[in-house]
Image (cartoon, rainbow, N blue to C red):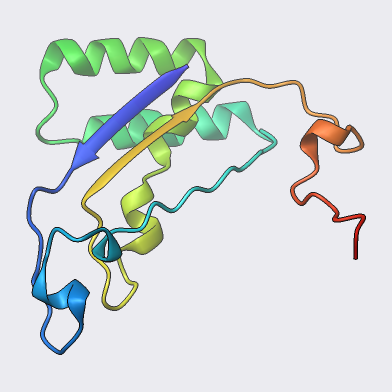
Length: 127
């Protein structure tokens, strides 16, 4: 399993009225957004090639980390996927939102779309 965490220490104070604007550290200003995805790898070679390309383009990656990253991508598709998926891309263009912290990981899983454990929404029997 691979996990990467990036933080943006900058926070912007917005104008306007309301308690959240008066106190930048108030809980109303921060929202934890959680998403869970299951993807199927349809072309391992294409996935690895794209991940290796991303690693090669990374200007600020130290050589020892780059070597480790290449090795990990060659061994494991989940590692390759982790190098290509960036949570910053999910909210980068959302107006009025600044990503302050993100973490993500990818891992192999046994997926059965018919199993109860994979149901995304629980049904309320009392309706």
